[in-house]
Length: 283
Ligand SMILES: [Zn+2]
Image (cartoon, rainbow, N blue to C red; front, side, top):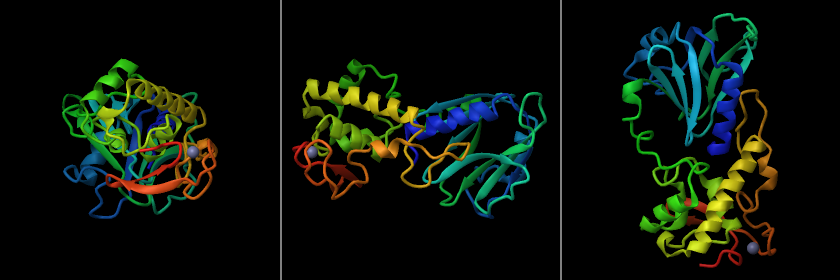
């Protein structure tokens, strides 16, 4: 699933291509019963409401993308497992996984031969339209924890002290911090040499400060490398990320730890799998 660096890369890609553009037409290609757009809207209404609106802002919050539209509306996008935005030539045939196709009004200085497609073969991705005054009341948005790149070390210590959970499930909880998933949680815990099952509140302040440092360092580095492509992830221009080359534990089960040489293990921690080094990350 795309995590903070991948979603940030997609948001930047959207800013480079469709920010300031006015929507001319929206075609919903999703099969009947699809929940890619809110079922409450129905396809026709969704298309009608979006037409004529201008994309005024593109923001990321956690793993969510928020497209602020003219007329006090926001399109809230979650890519989930395999959601992608692609900015493609209009002549490029519509793929069967292109669930939403957005055409823009011609504008000076823009590539008017291209349109934007939301492509999702697993079909868990979501495009939700809200009035601005309703947006932050929604679950999954209004209850998000702090942004890890904006969170001070003091703030991180304070939320960890209040936690009654193991550190790995806590890091994955979007209400604890927003934007981490399996990749960057596993990598950060390995870099800080903390076992994923450690009770969060029992970890020393020194270790938590190290963890805070590595979370920010790894996220920044992954953003610079346009994210991690271990599955289908790619940016708006279709380019995969490059951070997968720098992974030390995630997806490396059975391979030697890059610190000590011991084989990396993969075990279930909470409800999700965790990759870690049993020597560097002692319980
Ligand atoms: Zn090791």
